[in-house]
Image (cartoon, rainbow, N blue to C red):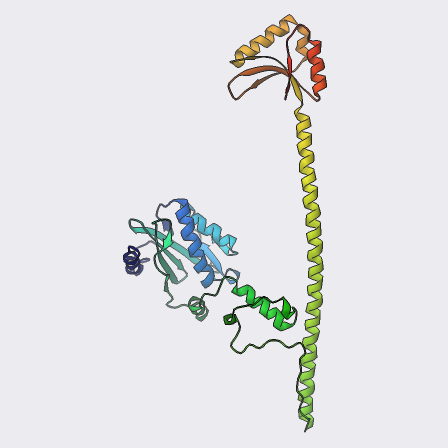
Length: 348
């Protein structure tokens, strides 16, 4: 029951959104997950109104000062936008649409996101009960907008896979894909005057009554022949792409096997390099362990040729060791040579 009054507040506050905010970009302090959720929802509307392929957006330097601005800049780049981030005081790029935003909290449990792209503004409110969620639709100010922008703003939302289905229908209509390969598509995605493509194109040719009529028929026949030739070329190119795709998949599978074998070889090599050590004693501190080693070398000067190691365990003990050696057999031989000195063989 709280969503209705919150939505009403959002609509009331929309009118003065950018009149009370400064010209730069700013955002209320919000946890990163909440800021990213609002950015994700904002990017859906921005992509609908300003397609990445034809849009170049400029964000001022203050956008990097908050989580919302950082997430917005990263999201725009990932969706293919050309993003210009100017330094403070730098001259504006005339080829890019300036993008500004204001995120504030008019009341507890409620955020308001205001975006301004060029001369148009978009505003939407979000509640924070049980996670960030829109409290109302986008409020758009399209005064002075181009006809293309107005058309994109009023275009009805299609299903998520509508673009893919339409592309498949176009391929079937062009004759570059068989009708049998087309999965059933919703009827609303086809035009009202759509008709299934025929396997054989039959062009009725009326009897030529004049020379001019015969010329028109010949011209139409030439157009059809040219279209058929284009379809044949596209089919051949598609076959080439499919062959290349098969080769790439085969090479990728081989590469994956080689990488797996390389990883196993590296693991075996790492295990082999680790080796073995001989261990003499264990002490609570490293200082006492080093003193013990010096005493041991003083008693048996031959031990000075060994490489001492003072390994520390997770329980805080310091071990007096020497090595490492490549094989356990060699380590046992070293222990055997230290007849009067107690030692054991451990993994390095």
